[in-house]
Length: 540
Image (tube, rainbow, N blue to C red):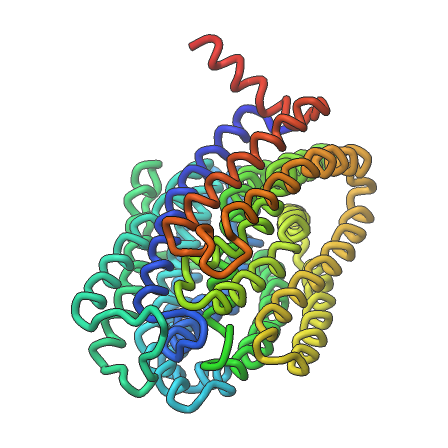
């Protein structure tokens, strides 16, 4: 199991993620209350446009940086200057690429929007293009944030990367409040697409971009705190960038595949825009789905990733194998509970964002449930994929991503046969099925690479976890019915207050029963986390 250093890093990462995610949900609630969710033309247009910069950034550099940057910087630590010159060279070439990509993407805003929103109603598509002009400059700042943050992670300064999104959310929330004060709110999404003025577009989309810029630029201050100074360096030969380029090539191909899947998803969902749950609803459901993944999986795996890279750099395969086993067992110990709780509270959670009819709440809740069925395999896949990255292998992830995209695309196109009110939930379920299939292939390939994956201990951990979840699931579903979460007008789906109180009660009860069950079952994973904490409390 994780040593104290990994544990402390994971807790610190999780704490920053929790705070930023809470503010992120506050921002999302304000957005929903301001422009609506299900059936809202403005919400669908903004969802398409505000998703473009992240998509383009991911194509250009996002996954490439995650797959290549940390392992390369860890290896560069053996240089005489501790890797400082290498970091400056790598950052310079990356910023040049990002700047060119940002300018080109912004100039092509209408074409990019059409690529994702061709099936939207014409007025909604035109509004999405207007939003895109303001949103696409985010590409550069997404890249800058990732570059500066990953360098900090590689130097074991984990906190800033997860804490500075708090600033992004604060800036964006301020912009939303200004929008509400100037132009009013539309929680039911009845405002037509052609009623949006240029000033409304500028305030909503401009404040979103300002938040991304703020979270990136502040990281320069943290660089200075750990002794790093960025100086542009255009002498890129002779420092191993060719190796990084070869690794990046396969990752770039993988990102093109996932982008293609994203286009298919957006086009299929666009056929339901203005009628039922569509692009915005899937975005909100994904936000809910990503909360436990970001707080639990990313926080633990990020700390492990640096250590994996160190062990892989020394060709210490047994240590890498142990890292994989420890990471998966530690993550799934908690993520299994998170998935069970999220399945139970899906409707109350949806009611936090969708305050209209119960039918709209149920439509959003069903999308959350369909995504949540894949939360555990999605988290395990995250660890497996980053193990390949730590080993310097990006070709294999390309292969199992290709398999996943083929499965997803076939399923997504089949969803066109569904009634419009089931389309978004169908897309989410197809995503889950494709993820499970991808994990099966990826795990098999990693086992071939490492010889074994400590499967016995991992499966025994899963078995204990699932046994401990039986009573919490029964209790959680009972509380959901008692609190009115399955009926129109019930307390649990009556509004933000009722939803939050119900989720808190259900979550606390399920967590107490689950961890109590694990303690009775003598879960070694739980005890390895709990015993140091108990010992520390006894000493205090």
